[in-house]
Length: 300
Image 1 (tube, rainbow, N blue to C red):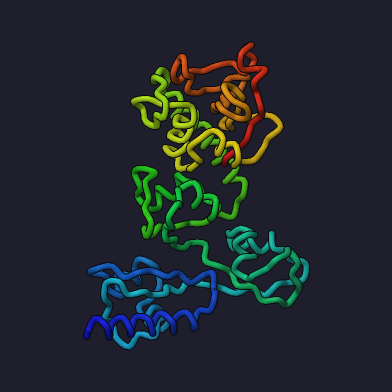
Image 2: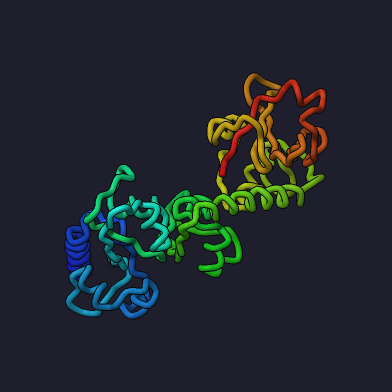
């Protein structure tokens, strides 16, 4: 009977909190874990105990495992001045234009003098969802994978659904571009570590790779998830007229359509899992590969 009452109370609390927050993009929902206290949660999410209690209409400090709580985010407001643009404001508060638009439900870059804008906190938390990878999260918030790992003391790219990550956002899009170049270098470095690994049909580990298994493994080691087969990998990504380091290059080999792919290294070379040589580096100008080349795509 007590469990039933608790469930009803939890449901009522959740509904009340939802009504209080509406669809605010700055409210985060968490699930209380065994041993959690309001004080510990307040320290973890950088809000006060009273703010958590108010947001969830709690009358006491008692919590229980499985309870759903809404965590309010710190916000500021800014009154638009004559001549200001979203870019100018984003630089002032060290956030991105995308974050500013999302916090204010703006569908264009048009703003006007006297308009009040919500300024989202530059630091926030994110609960990992099924299918997330560090790369997806880094792109969502405009931060580097390395930064996320450092902020959360992660020693690998492994994350799991329900995990709460601290995210320190950046206002500089060029930082993401630099990180992309760094990621390409890391991809290539990882790929080269497996030079000579034998080809195994269906192989997806360092004991043996097939063509797409090699790509899937290398990308995953760097926090990027791609489909498992060459055909499905080809369906994704962004087409590029000419490949850059870290892009994937595709070929038509034993069947019609894309059936083989590798990671472009630059200077007309690519690394791939060859059915005859295992993981090796080949030239795209090779008489075998050149006429079979289909194009290149970027995935980050």
